[in-house]
Amino acid sequence: MNASGTAPGPIRWKHSLAWLALLAPLFFLSYGWANQLAASRGVTDSIVFGWESAIPFLPWTIVPYWSIDLMYGLSFLACRTPREVNHHGLRLLTAQLVSVACFVAFPLRFTGEKPPSEGLFGALFDALAGFDLPYNQAPSLHISLLVIIWWVLVRRAAPAGRWLWHGWALLVAASVLTTWQHHFFDLPTGALVGLLCLWLWPDRGESPLRLAMGNTVTRPRLALYYLIGALACLALTFIGGWGWLALWPAAALALVAANYAWVGPEGFQKHDGHHSTASRWLLAPYRLGAWINSRLWTRGRAPADAITERVWIGRYPGRGDLAAGGFDALLDLTAEFHPLARAAHHHNEPMLDLVTPDLLSLRRAAEALEALHEKAGRILVCCALGYSRSAMTVAAWLLHSGRAGSVDEAIETVRQGRPQVVLGAEHRAVLERFHRGEG
Image 1 (cartoon, helix red, strand yellow):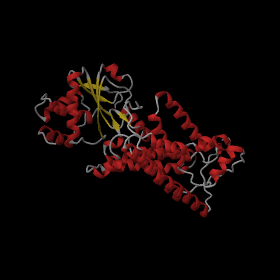
Image 2 (image 1 turned 180 degrees about the vertical axis):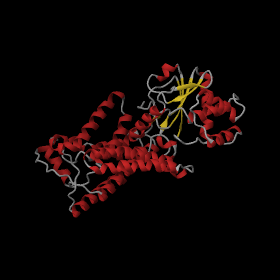
Image 3 (image 1 turned 90 degrees about the vertical axis):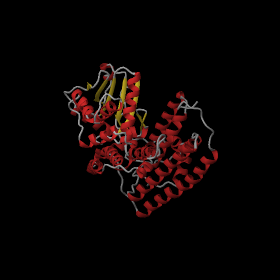
Image 4 (image 1 turned 120 degrees about the vertical axis):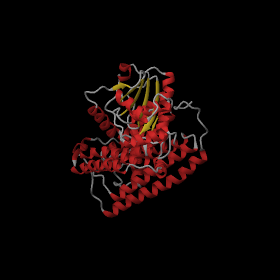
């Protein structure tokens, strides 16, 4: 059995070798070309912090540095299905293209001079110097590829072996500094590119690129707001010093803007109540802001209110909230929040915040609530605040189960239980269509 709990399939030798035959020459050609181009330009710019002078030069770390070449090949052998092979190849290809584009558009140079090395370590440094000039800095392609390769290998490893892969990956990451190949700035930017590639070509669900092409429902106004926020954060990176940290929330808000503009709730990559690893890390600054916002807006108010004896509406629960409220079932309507606690019966129907649910999502959510009602005791239906998505779903469930005979009655029942709910004309129109059996 593999790490996912399923029987491993056959290794796709020919498929994997075909990808390696494409990627290997592309790597050396494009990487070498970008290096030579920077050299011909006489690039002298660099992004380096004063404290980096304390980073030691450790010749032996050239071994883990070079080991990524072996890991590169092994990672393809760890893939078991055509989709895994293709998505892994596409991740590596995307990282290569994005990184080389950055090397050309924003060329940087490593500022230090390596001390001489002897023996095996010296030979490995000499081999590296044969094709690698002190350019191609940010984002570190070494780190981008490491993130992508690590994710494949660690998922295939037995539980006891995962810590070995984690440790070795950390050693490889550190080696780009201790071999004096990169400055620190190159590492987080390289990790960002690697995670972006994992997000673009996910393990589960469709690629955001394909979703964007097929999505006909967009929210341009909300997308614009998030894009403005992303640009504001990006502007902070130009103030120097640690202002570059704003690059993380800038990337997070840009991805959220893309979800609202083209991709939809699937862009948050939340399956069975959990986000993909890429989504969890890339969108962490946004989720933190959304969490703080949810607590500020509901401060001083009940976290949940009863609509019927067993169905409650509330904000997204924190640790201990489910047990404190006596809830053994949770219907999670958020796309943005990662679970802090799970109920005995848990269902997730991701919907975008501040967006009126479409008929299909609303019907799935209402049916899920009915299924939970049949097997659970007390149910919490939650969204960020417990004011809109959850209210809409419970109103639809009241209609679906026959507990309300009209949209007005369903909305009034919800408002009596939780007066703060926000259900406007657009919500009412969708509920009317739902009640007529459309969609």
